[in-house]
Image (tube, rainbow, N blue to C red):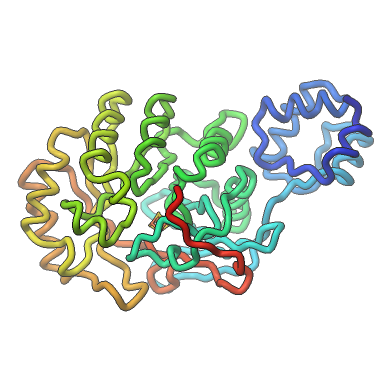
Length: 361
Ligand code: SF4
């Protein structure tokens, strides 16, 4: 296939998000040797290039053609808020179609953790989460996921050490794009981030957890549990009616056994809902035969419905788990003052007019 032919069928082509193999094949179809794809992969991800003009090892004719026929960036930063409490930044990122997503950058204990969005909005409807109010607009393309990371790195001037898929959206409902993006982040010629420093978090899309396990994906898996009985869980997470605790914990157990890696269970503590000592005891029993650790996340008061438990209640809950020898951490969210904490992300709605809520996932 000739370069002219490629120009006719797709213009402009978004290169960001293509894997090494895809870029090599694409270059060959454009009439260039496959190794040009390797060079492009390097420029796009390792060096974060957004302009073909700086790609000094590519022929000038090819660079000119790239400038006319391809897009190297999927988004741009249009807003940034800085926390007064800790070195946390929240970015508002504008995508090519006018959609907006939020991305959070946290510096802590020598780590630079970037929290990525995987969808514009979300239709899962967890009642404690601000993103749920947006409904689902659309899934993100792998390039739009990677660009969040590259834009943050460029702005901060600090490479990411850790990546968490805990921003807007349910990552496992955009499975293919999230895995494609993670592969590029992990690739030694890409961003070279260790697989165990990439965490994919889910509220419990059981068939996708099974797929993730069967495919032996090397990334960390986190599961948002948030309740110890189905009635309470279904009230705050409607998807429990589709995949209840038993199904979810079976999938989690199978993943931990097969991968031989610990699962992280996230547990958002909501005052008076799921924070009793009885809950802590039930939680310990539910996960007792699963290799795991538990992150307790005191609720960030994003709306008026729920309240954060008092400090002594949070500590008593954690102590009960410790007594049962379950590894537990209390995770105080960063950037709460700029609505960048867990469950607080929700891009402005003025450009999100197509938002829809659906339970068809
Ligand atoms: S917690 Fe996650 S899955 Fe639930 S509504 Fe929010 S973004 Fe969606």
